[in-house]
Image 1 (cartoon, helix red, strand yellow):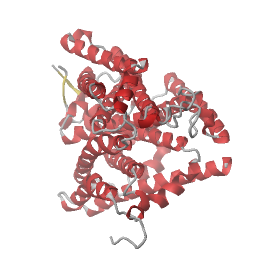
Image 2 (tube, helix red, strand yellow; image 1 turned 90 degrees about the horizontal axis):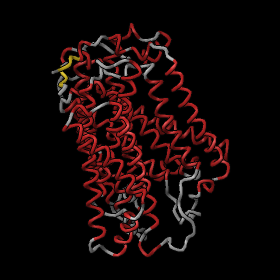
Image 3 (cartoon, each protein chain N blue to C red; image 1 turned 135 degrees about the horizontal axis):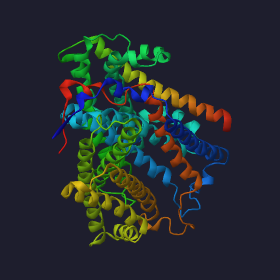
Image 4 (cartoon, rainbow over the protein chains, first blue to last red; image 1 turned 180 degrees about the horizontal axis):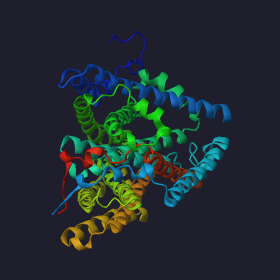
Length: 78
Length: 442
């Protein structure tokens, strides 16, 4: 990514070691898992999609639930 | 000598779902009471702020803004990580001896991760800003902030574990449906969406790859990676910094997790007469793993103490000297050491082994690992380079508010197991099926 003029590089999104660490190393086993779900045998794309739906649904419900809970706290106490 | 777990009936498997007992009710009330105590104090904290814990800003506790909340966060994350590792190992490496406790380990992971997240939520002075600050800042901070890595990885870990449980439970619900309560039919229908017996082989493969992802991520990149990096990457805190924190955190995670699984498995075995379903061999095997992990824990503590007191940089030497002069540190080491001694003695003389004594040893290990983690956090902060907090008055002692949160999270885990055991089998059906049957009792 090309640094913007007058902008410190550490303020640019995704420019830094954490990007390589998280997306290149830490999440790599998940990429392998997802590829294997859809390429291995016995194969059933619908069940692979069910797994992906669980992953997406749980992520959404986790952060969505947290958002609702914290907004309730805000309404009651702040 | 061996025990055929497959001789156990399906009736035994669904016993927790169907049984009504006074013990269950008492445990439920105790869990709700513990949560209630915490809720009472948490409301005080929300109304008056973190000042009620002495942790606010520079604080009145020797300058320590992190204490039991963060120590307990690491402790619960450790228990969570070790739990699913056991379950994944059953599937990947074929450690079928432990199949009867594999689902309990998965459930422990979900409950413990929830409690870990809760400690972050309650430690944030304004919890209402948690989601609204983390999500928008994520793309701007993920490249530099270990806290952002932490949020990312814990989310991934929770989601992987939840998916693992949701996929594996379908097989059991389908085959045990007649024994499950009709009033939960809508829930079972949702869990079984699109199910057919043809999917079993496919789902087993999906779950194998899930276990593969988990067993690489959890030990090497989470509790041996991102979690210790929250501390180990900060050179200004001599007691925190350094590569040894990765393996050290992992050893504590595995030690406390195996202890947690032993306690929970023993509780279920006693409550539901599961001597055949969870035979002694499971506990003897888990005890050996606990002994090995405890040894690793003590060995890595020795590494840290030796490198901290022998010709160490001044600030590290000071931090280490403070640590080894703290009686609580030796209490923590002693509790783990005692458990190791008991396991070693019962390996030499098997008649010494009893599940009751093992549970006591495990409770000691759980207390010891919690103490070590809280001390790590507090003393690491107090004895930073340049005596950063030297002029700040006070001494850190966990407040009643913080202790109530610890009690509350234990209550949440107990409540989770009580309720979940009324909905799904806490032991996989595979554990009593013919192709998963031999359990070595030596």
